[in-house]
Length: 57
Image (cartoon, rainbow, N blue to C red; front, side):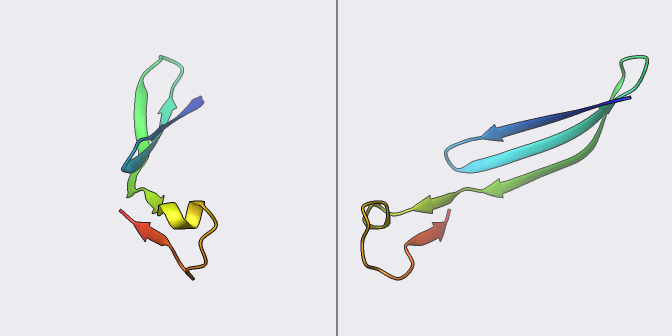
């Protein structure tokens, strides 16, 4: 048995999938998830003094 993981990191989301491949080569997707991306504003990247510049898109 073999496990295969796939990750897609996009501009506004991240997707993850986990599959299991058996001895015959058949794939079974066991888990998957989708989440919004974490974005940081320009002033936070530039070392701005604001307390929290993180926003979930």
